[in-house]
Length: 638
Image (cartoon, rainbow, N blue to C red):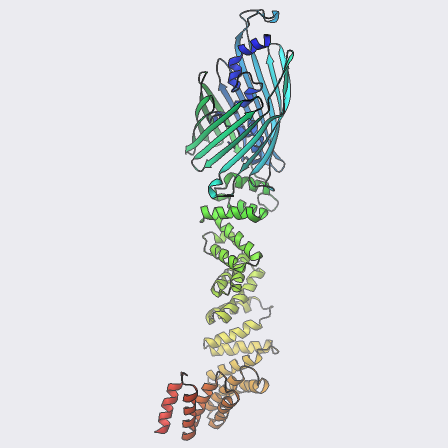
């Protein structure tokens, strides 16, 4: 009877402390700060230090700031409620949080009807409920990006008159922030939280009776409508049968100003918050359905924690993951996100980069994504996807902040596999222009030269690239470079330089299989320079030494040209006739047939010349020399 009368006397206090009067530990359900209270009592999903210390200890594993807060709440009928919290965000060993909660009720008059201990009428007494809660959270990056788990122990105390009681308890919590768009990009800002309070139930013994805090479970969700604000919802189920639903909205019309609205089963709430650098002041007001309004005021000091840095100067993996979780919409987090994706790999990184490329395609973060996709495709020999992704990076504004010489070399190599020669040389040219002297750069010179020469027939570009290559890398096998330089100069009709490069090739690589071609092209170049006597020995070496080589018929043809140029028409006729006889299907045979007729005409053998011209016209009706053959035939017949 005595106990029931005390509860009745203290009803305003206990009703203020909980949503059901007289619930043991009800004051630990009231909220930690003016911010949470002004949003209907949300304390699971707000992502701040006071919520981590008081509501869900798992949140401390994903916090970005060190935070201290102090809250004072003016309650009903002279009751007051005070909370002080501190949170140290997660390090490699996890984060820590501490909360001290006190509920005090004064001004109750002693009645004296029940016990001599309370017989002094008119005197006043009060009651105090206190809890000290300490715990921490651990980021679960290596298992699931955006997830954290936490636990907390608490010491609770109650005092009234000369009675004191103490108890111990423990809580658990879990939080997951959907940083990555697992199902759809709009799901990404969703945060889910769960906590189980009083898993280890505190027991307080007052007089002969023992109070035991009821177990309860809270489930919450918030949605970040960046940059406008946050919408939160929280549901509670307690072992004592009580239920509670809270809803809150926070919006930031200005960077330093927050406006909040909320409500729960018994209250409507509102509040504002001001932030200036590391300082913050939050004010909230609640209208209770049975009691008068109450006012709440919080002071917050928050400072970003210095992230851990690894020996190579980059952010540690755990800190990088927290940064992405907290700032995944912030394009300045690009390099950290890239590092985390590299460490995480697989589908998680792919979802991250797909989201960024879709939402922020012009940012450096997206450039990192294109490089990551290209590298992954290249490593699995998917040349088409690799070329596509590297080409996206090639045309990106931030490519130079992301790419390395190896990146562009991979573009060139993938494009070569696809036989996209222009894309290949685009990649190689970027490697060649890099300032470092890596092996990628050396190889790029020779690959680009080969593509220009063999596939694009771009002789000026081949000359530019190979001339740089032979000057930069003299210790390398330069047989291809010197031979292709000679051929390219021939294609540009720079005959003297052609002779010089072919002579270098012949001097350095006398056993190379392309010696007969080098002899022919240097001989032809000398002929074009008007030096037939110098050209003949080279052409003769081809004919005598390599009679089955592909250029043997070309060498015999130009021997005939050289003989004709020196005035030896008879020997020229013999050389042309040899080409026609020995190489009937050769590519230079039509020209040899025409040249045979010309030299016979010049020697005065009109009938023989006419016969050769007629054969040429009959055998090669579409040849470009047909018009000349017809004109000469007409001249011979006149």
